[in-house]
Image (tube, rainbow, N blue to C red; front, side, top):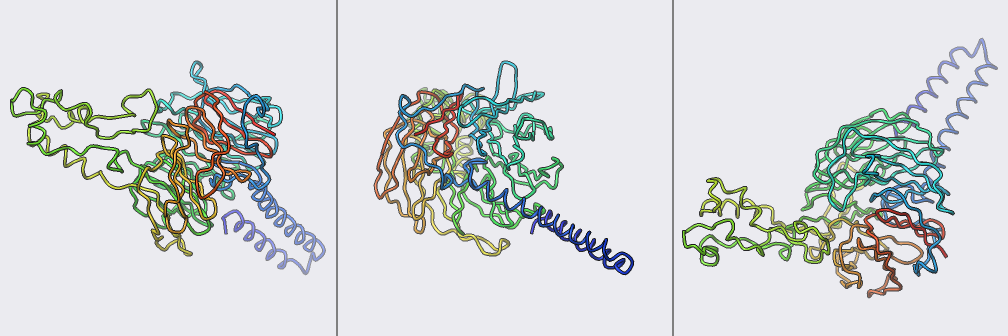
Length: 516
């Protein structure tokens, strides 16, 4: 039972006790107050139940209901996405990578205007694409972000009354549906090289905000801090299961008590903590990724005598840093199609200066061994893991299976009954059995390049969106069954959303609505 309900019940019974004490002198008045207290209590509970049930009808947060990536049952977006035939409207907005948040006929979205350094919140009419209102905040400074990221990365969350927006560069802002400011909470910028990407979620009367190394629980009505929970390097969005918060973080999965922020359990896995887990019944599925989590992604350093025989061109018994082959990679992304050299391949030659303790631009045997030994500690096998969650949240969960090959870096998984889907860089789809982890198929979509958006299940089809702007629609089957494909020729990092008969796709600079 959450604290809000508990306070209502306690207040109700304290009031009832006081009424009984004075009943002999004022029976009629107390009977009236007693019935009034019951009515107020019932109204508050009914409001909460109605709000929760309505939220399941809309994609009101990142990836919809509890981050599942499954559209509401009433959503029937088109399967063919030829812009000339099915594009209903296109609205230009400020750049960003946050996903649409939908409540009834309102679409909430964020953007960043670099020229004025504005962080913008939009409310867009779902039927027409008209901007109903836009509100901006001015941060003191802008957090550092990756080249494919944005200061507008977190998806808003709505509860039918308010919309809540988080910017790592500013803090949290709450608006009503007419765009009026309800409250704002400025926060310091989290320490990160790539920005803050986890999206806020609403659980009962609490707004949960992932700030990389802390989980902030706020009173959603006032913005007051309820508690702060320690986490470690998480870029994921919180997932709710009963009275616990499930969070993917650096090197692990963590369960947090929703009432007070205390830790229930912590499970170690090999991961950077980027993607958001998917909950299906009592099973949790998550893709744990590291840059050196698969042998195909890195080159192990050879022994010193071997590298000498291969690369000591001046025969001085040392390996000049310039002699280390450019092709020798600490990590690589072979399927990545991006114009960022250090992201595509990061060579050992760039790592070596950190271990050149003699500062002579060369590696002796001791320095080489230290570099080799240091990094080999981190060359651990990552993978998709299936976790069976305990009935009692204080008990330890159980690892059921693990799939270790061609793991997605950013996109979350998609669970559809007996199948779990993963989209990796290069447009590689892996379909696994939910119970055993057996790979049913692993095939290419025919849409190469990077993938940052998470897949969507809607209208009996799966929608995959590449960073290059290709949208591929697949029919769930025992084999890869591509139904249609289109190319918007714009960069897309945000996850698609289905609302009624529309598919909403946010590129870095526009929001598209496809309809039947």
